[in-house]
Image (cartoon, rainbow, N blue to C red; front, side, top):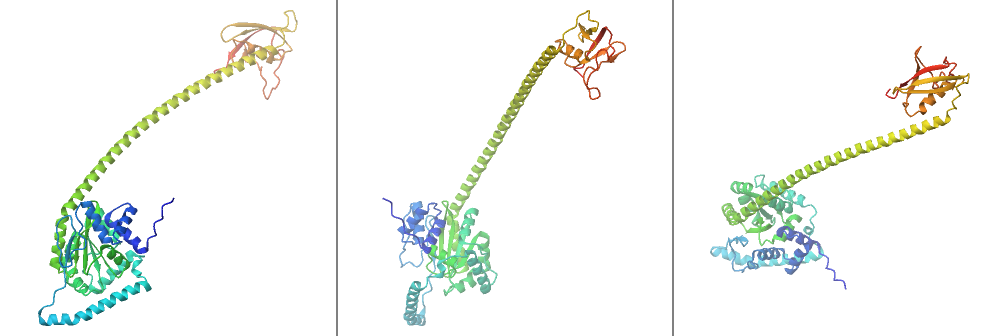
Length: 445
């Protein structure tokens, strides 16, 4: 029986799944989904539970509501600094607070009801991130128009890109979520974020990524980090090989306090960052050593391959030379057999030797190149080609030769040419009844 198929994820769940994977560094998408489902898709709870699980410490979810300020500098917990709004002072302040309390309660209650009902009529357009880089660039442009160009250096890229760069460069990443409608946002931007000391501190010590929660990209990050109030800042760094939220600052905070709190977070996690740097350095050194070993192996391998190639070339050259010698021997053997066959054929085709008392006979003594003598009779009417064929059929005769008379010295035209296709007869050649002819070897020529 086939296993039941898992229900398809909504757009918001898919985005949370990707955010959770970015923050925890888990490679298994199924494991990320199971963890989120166990926490009812509360990404902050899932991330914190995952970190606690890795570090072996108890959960820190759902802190008691009676503690508006929670500070914990232990390395294994998220450092949280929440600034509550100041309590009213004096009779006039409390009177104003009590008078406005019903109106404030009614306003926020109706606003929450309206927003809840609106979700059923029209889905939140921020739920679909189509141009995350455009959202960040648009926020920076709007920020500069409202607060000026004197501000910390904003990271001009997506949240995921900022995480990747901070991970690669082993730097702190400070995330700022800009709540445009919050009453403390304007004062925080003017009096804290754009001050010279905060600008210098942030620009020299960390990457700074910011976006408005009214933009889809900022809303997506807001859903991942689950801020309680604005202004909201989260410090993220590489810890135990995962990008981890190590500090949260919420509420209106003064420049000096902001710098002090960020310094506390950085000092509390400096050992982790140094450990990551040393570990990465060790990995890089190991990688360099392995690369050097691989290069040395490749050099040795190439040398062996070159040696084998030269050996194969030498063997192939030797084989070709041996084959060449063998083919030459075979060709020489074929040539010798062809020559012998030709000699036998010429010998068989020779006319019979005339008797000594024949008045038309000519006695010729041939002096061979090896100083031997051969004697035979021919007829005056026979062609000089018969003399040539007779000498050619002899075993001791060279392969190429010519016949020369002694006096006057001349070469007998025994072979047909273009000018004289039919060689002359012995009589036409001017031979007498008794002649001595010399056979000259032309093989070397």
